Image 1 (spheres, helix red, strand yellow):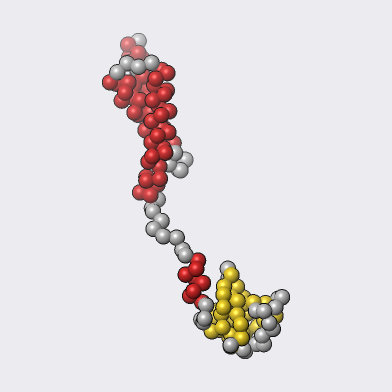
Image 2 (image 1 turned 180 degrees about the vertical axis):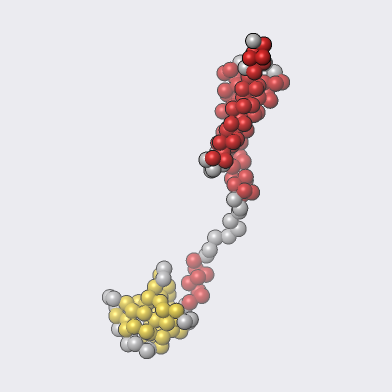
Length: 152
């Protein structure tokens, strides 16, 4: 009977709950459940040091879990998943094509568009005027994968 009493000590229960939550993080990734496991381990340590009531244990558990989640999640995700050093600048992509020349492969009409060959690849193209096949054009803009062109 004493063995069961020893096993039901709050610090052992909190430690086992914390361990179970940390293991559950592997099954459900997202780096959230682990912080609650850390909170449970913190409560286990506090229970080893001092004798506190269940209400205080729950407050410590909630506070330490939420604070560690808010303070450390972004940093730890950066360590485990990786930091994004820079995001692609869409204006840079636009500058790459503007001013370049292309050849019309398929007649371009103002409403239906057409196709141009640029750097060996066919691109959808739009223009404000009708442009015949074989005409050399200048790229004046880009919207998604459609090039805006004008006659040279």
